[in-house]
Length: 347
Ligand code: TRP
Image 1 (cartoon, rainbow, N blue to C red):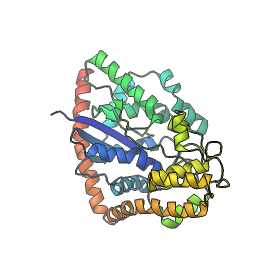
Image 2 (cartoon, rainbow, N blue to C red):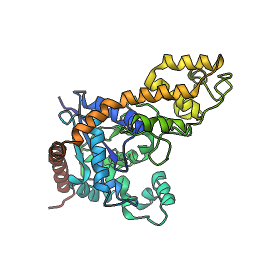
Image 3 (tube, rainbow, N blue to C red):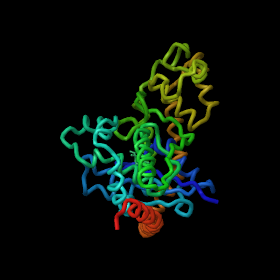
Image 4 (cartoon, rainbow, N blue to C red):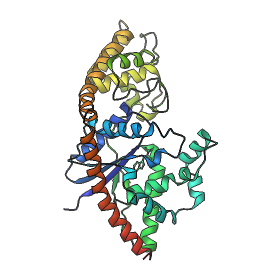
């Protein structure tokens, strides 16, 4: 049976947080355990150097993502884990694919425009080329499915276009990769506004946070008086939102809403209902709620942290995993580059 291929990656910009874990990495794990798929997961280090960064800190950041992957439960026996720059073929293919992409198309991507706004003094070619390198990451493994969030869809569309153009022009056989929607949770920000994000301080809980840290992070989540009418107050109920068919990511954000979502994720829907009826009755005591919730989150993270620590204490093993992963990835990648070069008439 021909297995479907999966590729995904994470930029090395810091520790993974609960949003990355629930929204992406849990999906990576599920796919790696499904015999229908052959899975490749990388740390996108090359994608992390196109915005300002500190070279001295960088190796630690890259390793930290690897440890987060392993700690979260990605099993190197079941998936190929590697670092993007260890497979230099990605850059070779990237250049060849870039012949099919117009400069204007890249300049109009929303992600590019955002970065230009964020770093007006650092608008470099690598930033403009970001989506083409990402297309290469995906197409080099002829991946059919790419587990990524909606924010990456414009990039995926570029990869699909490039695949189509290459196939038409040079007769290659790239599949048009599709987003793989894991039933990843929408994880809200602790600030109560939007989703959990590495770039918003105070919005996240990392996979390595201690119980104390989790408590102090939750302490800053804004709350209300704890009492009132659910349907009118900030404490909107899950049911009322569903009744109104409000998509999850459009549910109005506020701190209490975020807390409720976390209660649901880590303590279950029943617990949330309990709080909802308290809200309409005797009132919710947020201090107690936050304490219990912190414990529940920490309980979830503890085994991840223990596993992560084991790998952290065994750098030789991690090195072996990465070398093995890169070797496996290079074999597939090299084959694709050879095919594409031949198809493009390079001798
Ligand atoms: N651009 C992705 C992000 O910012 C990371 C990434 C790089 C990626 N190459 C990839 C994701 C290939 C999926 C497939 O999250």
